[in-house]
Picture 1 (spheres, rainbow, N blue to C red):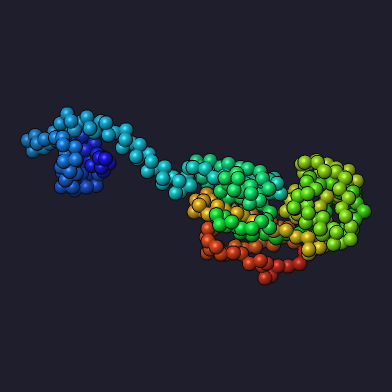
Picture 2 (cartoon, one colour):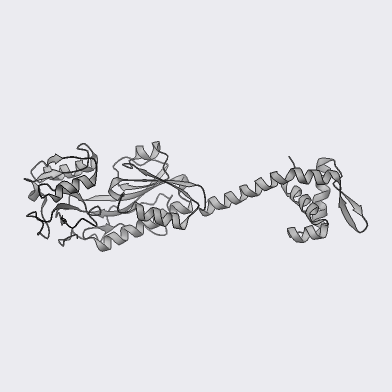
Length: 336
């Protein structure tokens, strides 16, 4: 196979018409250009240039070879640029999975920031439960969702990003709406609405906490979307229990009341495929998710940002502590 470097030198000589001008254009010495041409002549067995007075003249063979090499050299240059773009995150694609609990509150903002920072990046957004099975089957690069109890796998790293409590969302005229906080048992005789499938692990956590409080939640309304749940709750006849982060920017006819139950808490995490961990866009997503978690912890009572060590890059085996040492108790102030 012919050496692309020597072919580039030949093409430059053809374009400039002299060894000295070619050397200046390429940043070589005239001697180096002459050596490349001599070496290429030996490799091809063709006379590529010949002396003409004090200069040189490219032969017909040399011009034809330079012409034929043009598209190949251009393609190699484009490939070099593509590699640089991939390293800098300016092209390629990233597949981002996200759970329903952050679909409306985190992902639109995150997608906007990624697209502004990496305008040439293909960002593929996928709504999933973000279990390990989802991550592996759907070919995701990074995922934001509820921390899973599934065993960790070698190809993935996970960072816990926040821990939060739960709130009861009730209609503005509901008797519980004026309370600063409630106990879970205060919902024992209420009719519940939830968009969680009854057998889903995230609702299983709520059900287990209710059983520990001495009752089984009476789920009467179980639509597939959160907005429909809120419509039923706004009538005043139903309540719903949701994580604190979800209960942001509620409608004016709804109120979120913190539930004082330290056993009813959940963690959110960001999971990264090891092979994608060094991609600039993936690193940016992880940084932005931590920043968003930090903002929520500052604005929403009961939310704790689990600070991943900034010095530890994603893709290492370093783990976040199971609980931040200064985790405060659930605040009793209204969420909204």
